[in-house]
Length: 593
Image (cartoon, rainbow, N blue to C red):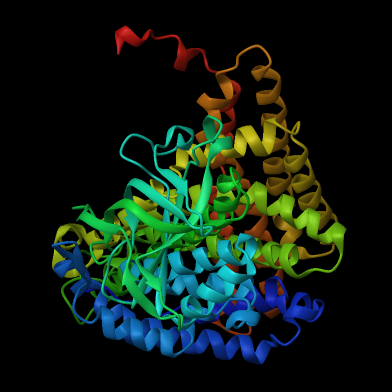
């Protein structure tokens, strides 16, 4: 059966031993109170909540799903009570602005909590994670009046939030959306239109649902420059700030999906629903990107969390399931077969899963620290560099986490053999739940185009070159570290390969405009492989001084060596693909397909 235990030991290792997050927190006034003891206590309580409250509801939520009747949605048994407990224990306000009732915890801490949420129960996790993103957007762009009205209720968990972008005729191409907002004399707007694929658009977990809706004003210019953002609650706040009169928004249906059955995915119909402008007119898309970029990292963590749950379950099964004899001879003489874990192919699969997961956890923490510096640092130069690094790595984190997350879940299912295909064992649910993460919040193809187009080519590769320079600087600083010396050559080769391919693609694009589009996914994979190599080297450097003192640090070195020997070499074949240009992709005429 599926199992899940929050990987606290590894999380604390990455946070405390690899990145020394406590030193960063202590250097910034707004995070100074986040001590190592406080961070450990939060993670340990988060583990209790996710393991004890949420994971037991995971399979049940998948089996029951959400149900729609006359515009109302009922979530699976146990979700409503669990959400109440979850909110009462303060988890809905963890990273919120303290001015409005949030706790102000750093992102480098919360990314680990979000991984736990997704690993234990992705369907449940989506409700508070969408709310967190809505809070971030309102805090950054809304008027003081709207912040006072909505943020305290959202942070408390009494209300929840959504993101309403997609329409039946447009997904990525938001410039052609049709939703309209007509201004009223009192400063409000009447919002009309239909939105689809709205996560948490209707449910029974909270007293009110606050929708952030993209729509166009009557005088809007065409395209994305004509989009505005509005806050549209399900229930209009009354004089006391409570949920009052029903607004003009109804749930027309819920989607019947491959996975995440406990998460309600809704069609929402807005019919002269009263809303209020967030930020400036026609600046809705930049404002919404505050939420979208948050959600993209969080959805990346969906892949990571599910990959961890799949790995733990596969290891548990491989230790118990008896099949065949080891190539080295009988390992379990008291039985007629040895456990699966003695076999080389099973070990290959488990090590692959573990290397992806632990590399991903390190990248999540690294990006979280960059977000902390961008938000809390009082040094403008530090803030600017961190913002650039976040911009570069967000599409990598979303796409690479979720691609490798699905790979990991499929491998875990394979370890189970036939049982992996049977619902009761839980592995096929991980596969189904992981699949959507490659699609929503911007498909992984869109993430790859963002990386190669906006974050690489548009600024002449400067973001990438700065990143490469940081990796090389770290390598030079670790010249005396024995374990780093062991892998300095393949890491430098990987970095040089990324640098060469980046330059080659920019050169090719001058004469072949399709080459960036055609190469984006492979380039993102190459970028991810090189990034994980650097982070594995950093983890091994942190583990080496304590090797021999216990199983944890020794295992870290062993898995790191597996990554460098068995996984990083994929980068060389990707580089060859990328150097080959786009002729083979673009040559076939459309009529010949």
